[in-house]
Amino acid sequence: MRRVVFNQKGGVGKSTITSNLAAIAAASGRRVLVIDLDCQGNTTRYLLGDAADEAHAGSAAFFAQTLKFSVKEVDTADFVVASPWDNLDVMPASAELDELHGKLESRYKIYKLQKALEALQQQDGRYDEIWIDTPPALNFYTRSALIAAQGCLIPFDCDDFSRRALYGLLESVEEIRADHAPELSVEGIIVNQFQARAALPQRVVQELLDEGLPVLEPYLSASVKVKESHELSRPMIHLDARHKLTQEMVALYESLG
Image (cartoon, rainbow, N blue to C red; front, side, top):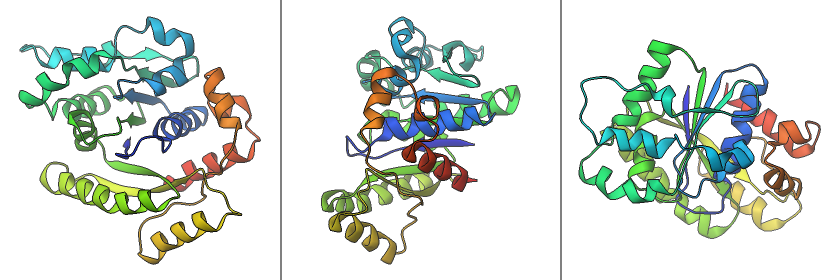
């Protein structure tokens, strides 16, 4: 299964959700690859810690080689590094992604990631799951990820601006599915930083449900523990497996099937 975590709005928890669901999958025995396509590299830092500074191979190097003509197929595994966690590998991000963006877009390399990941799973069988973290923009990297993925998860923070932006986001995903990626589907909307006792989050989420949108359960609670998790570069399943938020994430992962 190839999943992309996407929202054009920043600060909604894309990197946190990608990293933690992937870590849960790996901890359950699945062989997992996480691909970071955001030049900020938050997912890379979260999963690799200080080793992120030494991770020279990665998604930028992968895309750079697509600009060079070669009759020989490139092994995608060459751009992957092992994380400290069993069964979990990372294709790290770097600032070079931003430098490459214009060249990749002008030469229309939009299908390269899809072909590489399909080959990696079909011919190699190395990974059971591939998770892709995206930048907060509908740019070349995000389109590449959506075309390469089979499932799309949309993090959502509970405010009215996010709700209004969600409709345009869903239309963008549907347009890419119709034009380029018939396998792609929106698996669901992940409610993040949910405050159960506050009226506004309850109202906004209920409006989504009333409109028949695919809101996933459980909702992910707001917690300062996740900030500690970021600081220590330890996904929640490895930091505190019994924490309420960890258990919500485990239940959310299991609901994906």
